[in-house]
Image (cartoon, rainbow, N blue to C red; front, side):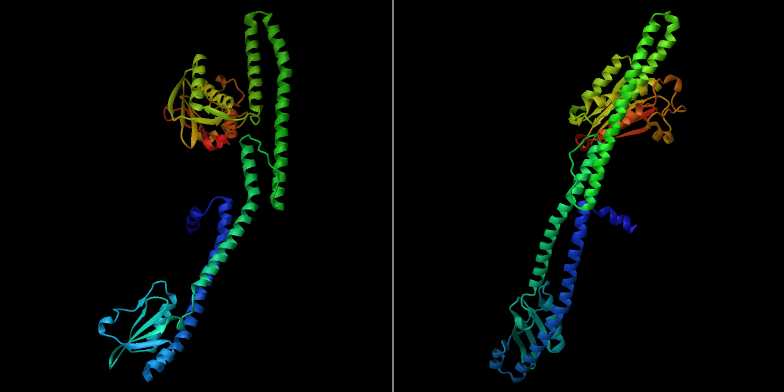
Length: 432
């Protein structure tokens, strides 16, 4: 319980935690030195000096000679009762003064009051048979001079060492933050220039990241080239099939033409899934206008789609064609498995939310993680006979959202009762 409570107050960033690791020993050292100094120096030295002054006061009171008192740096004289302070006087931050007051009362039972008004004098008030007597002692005789200089020196040198360590630590952590930014940008489809630097371990991690990034880029290029080549090679015989089918009877050719059309749709789905978004740069986009245009295009295509809640405004850095493809895929899925779809778009200061809801059978909560995987078809939740795809629609949407630094959430629609697919993109993440 205590660990979780402390963890909530700790900084989350590496630089903040490293700074905390740096400051804690310095602050602890300053506190320990200060406490030890107070206990050993203030108390010990002050007691020894007070004992010397006590013997001098005893001598002056015994001989009652003002000349001897003046020679010892003291002054004494009778004062009226009205001049007696109501209580001992000491400033709250005068630590050595507390020891002086305590030691004076311990050595002189007839001492009435001790006044430490400033750093120049100690005023002692005694009561004897002759009345009230005031003895003034030089403050330098009972406590060390300028005791605060130790605190100033410790705090000053501690701050200087902390500043030097802070600059050095920042220089050491900068390559790590650059590596983190490059890795995060690559996850969003951006290729930031990065050169390994810093300590040996950081350079090794940076070199491994550069090699991994190059390997992934090569694999994605090879995948795209392979599927593009397969698509090109298959479209030629498909075109010949369509031409051949056009020469025979229409009734006999209709089923085979539908098969050819299904094969073309499968090829288009493969290409959409294999198409990389890394080379496409983001640009300021009016997300509400973009979604409204997609809905209008779907309505012109005679799809039962309507635009629902629209909130917020502003330009967001997006890849417009990718977002269009993602919303179109969600709309097509919604009207394929349901009778109608409703699209909502909300823009806040933190995120862009595009929601597509339908009145279809939905997807069971335990199957939603599987639904976003490539080539996955959920027969119990989705009607297989009504679907002509290859199970890449939600996977393409997930990849597009991830490239923008966002996520795709699948949940039950509260309005229509079917599936609610929501794309959430952070505005800062979208801008890269």
